[in-house]
Image 1 (cartoon, rainbow, N blue to C red):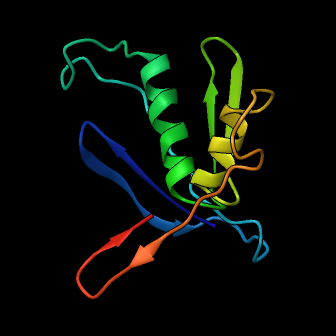
Image 2 (cartoon, rainbow, N blue to C red):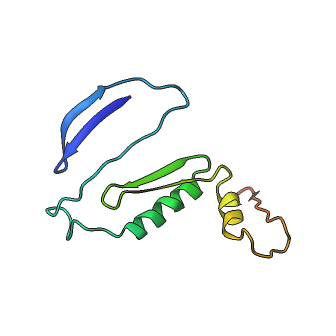
Length: 115
């Protein structure tokens, strides 16, 4: 486990080893506090941020993204093992669909690709 710290856009602590973890217990944690000297306002839209984080989870299959809001004491996590396929199945869950089981596919040609 490594740790590094920045304040006011400057590194205040060199990268250092602070512990160990198992091969399957990995990830990255980012903690930040908006500084009014860099932002118009220290406030930000939690709903916009969570929307973007969920989109990242959809686009990165198998990656778990967790947002912890210490101001409102809430936590949200997103993980889509099959990416867009899992997201779409979640979005239409309980709704009538044709075909009944949604499908996702991809195609690759010599000069193009589509998912």
